[in-house]
Length: 244
Image 1 (cartoon, helix red, strand yellow):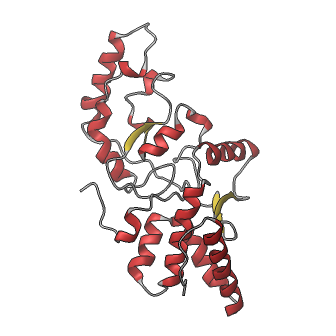
Image 2 (cartoon, helix red, strand yellow):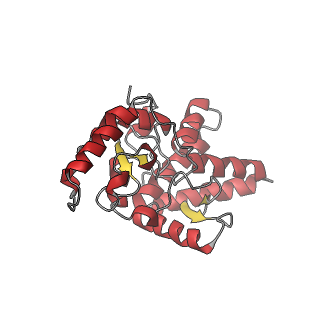
Image 3 (cartoon, one colour):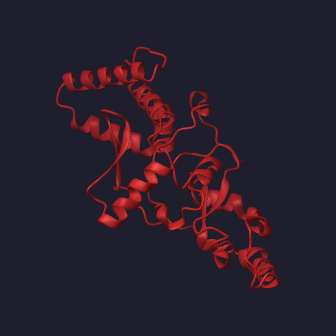
């Protein structure tokens, strides 16, 4: 099945976390015959011609679901579960890099929205295969994604900033989704189904909240975070409710 059976409270919250480390999935057994060889024949037929996106036959679509499974049903760019078909993103765009159009190693699973936002920025956007889990974190005061000091150099840091901006990972919609996830965690601290859903669909939120819980020294700190959440709900004109 393409869809996953998560609680209804999350199915209308599209959610955006951020990029997390993705291990490249192995190439499927018949990919070479079904996609690479057919793609090579097509490219040979257009040798010397400048191709447009319409010239490429989407042979890769036959392996979209296997790519999705290889990405654990997550979008490679937002790290959130994709409820539906999603899309095959060419990390290096087809038109600029036609020889990579039918290569498994060039495919990243992505939501349709993220694929559209990524557009043809190619290597200006961080590759899910190069990102490390500790490069991004959540600021619990604003629920924005921030860069950490673990990013190894300024070149990658600039690409990370570019990625946050172009993929709109700190949009109002994204922040609202994180707020709902955090509020659900505070409202249901012992509901394992809810907590596991947050771990799956909002891994950075789950990590931040778990670190917060481990660092609690008094109920005052907890109350302060709850008050911060209430303030952010008011800021974004979201429905208010008791968090605990």
